[in-house]
Image (cartoon, rainbow, N blue to C red; front, side):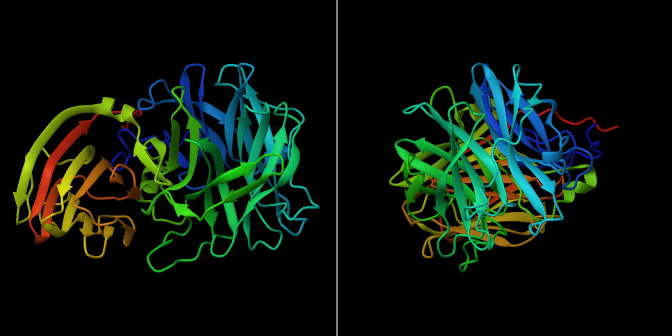
Length: 484
């Protein structure tokens, strides 16, 4: 039984969240028998991290989600301390969950073991663990830490009709993150191929939650590295999420790639997982939180949510991520303005609230710097501040005065141009900002008071010129908890 939510003040209206308890990484994102399935790391009994289960939601349109029973729970010796992250794949009409079993083992130097395991379902709801689990263990004669060996992503290579599994790992000295590649012909018997990629320089001591796919002709490896050191105002979160672009040789198990790039520049985005939609789009969803952050919603009986699903595209050798087009179907009321020019802070009728979508086409020809206040109180003492400085080519997100959660600032580089497009999603305690059609993205939790609903546009140097401003109210996408 899930922990009961006692207050919905921060609970999302259309982002995926659990009906109570703690959630983190998305797992098993897939399309199966006409529906999208998303699983997630779940502790149903408290609003703190604990022995991991797999929670489960399902949708036929990617925007309206329903809760299903817990799919996996720690019941066996190999997963007795948690069913950690993994992925899902369909084979012969059945849905296979491939996940990490975590077992505390104090008698060995590492203190724990992690192995890869399978659970199988014929209906996508009820899962039976494979009786001969685990199906993959860390080869002890390779440079692989036998404990930190987790988060399998399974895919099928149609060219040779084989299945491949990428697993997050680190070297035995625990200093260098890496990805391990396995192959199989039947999803059951797995053979080690090679250490596919390894960190170099400031790329982290552990690579978690790998996802791998060919996207628009590019082999892209998505990882969540731990241990990347801060470089000025880059890599400011405790852990990061990003990608490499390159080319894989499946026979040799080697991935040749370029440099590591961030997927999100905000405070709260981790462990993204991808899947392919029936129409060929590559979709991605991430945990919209971060380890060790303040989470005021824990007082209310829940913690954690997911980002909106995003589409991945490649433009000019870079990954762009945009909100899925299906989100347009959540729009209800619309308020629209065009050709605005003003020199003092402005609010616009119908552009406010704790939930909604804001789309701006900004003319920067006469604007050197601007700010936008989100979730501002009437006296402006509480606000989340977005800003752009054209000369510095920096877009900033500041939550020093955003409310009950953590403070601080994040920034991302945005090359100066005459135009800028912003698409912003608000959902009670979450802000997602897509800059220039997904060239850069910033995802961050905020915890303002319920009466902090104003959106204010503030010129800082020159005119604030907006070619187009649209604000949409958005409908409900996730069942809302009932509070007595």
